[in-house]
Image 1 (cartoon, rainbow, N blue to C red):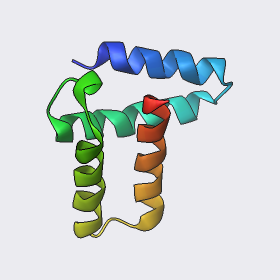
Image 2: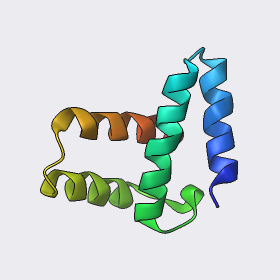
Image 3: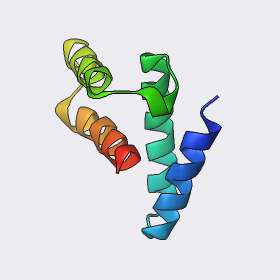
Image 4: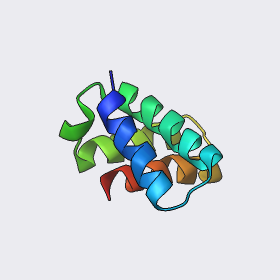
Length: 78
């Protein structure tokens, strides 16, 4: 469902010399976020990001984990 978006992440990650593990982690974290947003990844807006981060904080997810999710989302939107 998110193949095009994830393909762009993989390509950008390789161009930036990220490790395969980093690329895989970004793709996994983005897939979780895209499922949460429930819309085309290219239609996601800042409110969707804020809602997701707040949702994770309210669930009690640790700050370091939230930072990992946030890093993946930032990477996607660059």
